[in-house]
Length: 150
Image (tube, helix red, strand yellow):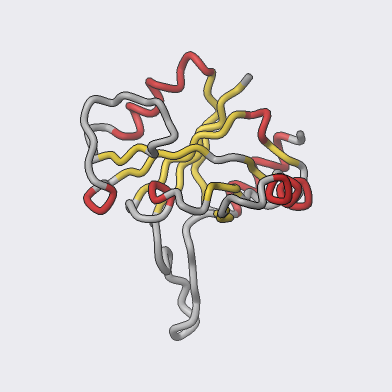
C-alpha cells in the first residue's frame, strides 16, 4: 500500500479520513458522533448507548468491506442502510482490507455472488443544473472513514 497515494485518492473523493489504532477506535467513533442521533449497522457490535431508526439518524455507522487505494472507492454490502440514508456516513475499515485497484475489489464480489454490493466514492455530486456542482446530489452529504491500523 502506498499511503500517500491512498490519502490523495480519499481527499480527491471528498472523504474525511483518520488513521486510528484499534484501541482508539471506540473513542474516535464517540468523538465523531458527539451526541448526534445514530444508526449502527446490525452487522457491527458497537454499543453507544442509544440509537435512532435509520430514517431519523444523523450519523450512520457501518463497516466497509474493502477500499481501493487508487480511487478511494469503498466496497460495502448493498443492503447497508447506514451508508445510504443518514446525512453523515461513518465507515470503519480494517487497514488489511485496502486493495491496490478495482480489479482486486471485483475479485471479492466474484467470490460472493449471492451478496448485493455497492461502491461508494465520497458524497455524490452533480453539475447537471447550470454547470454548478451540487454536493450531495443524493445520499449522505459527508463521508468519514476510520482506517483501523493493524
